[in-house]
Length: 114
Image (cartoon, rainbow, N blue to C red; front, top):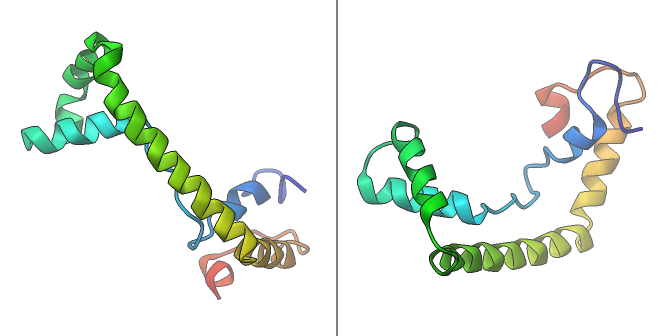
């Protein structure tokens, strides 16, 4: 059951909507982009092109700092996910999603969180 119904929300998408599930950490480029935005005080949307070019021009040694931060965040995320799965919260969310799907109707916000 990877699709709830044709044209409706997939089961995989519903499973990822668990509010208690740990969120995916940012990658090295996203960390660099956030730092660049905080240093200039300008919203990220206004200077993304310049920051992107700066990232492309950076050497491997300069990028390594951000890549190491991203690896550390990913390690922490994997530990959080292991704890989340072993605690049974993932199984409870899956059971709740599958319990509401047999009628073939999409889940509403009330059904998801109550």
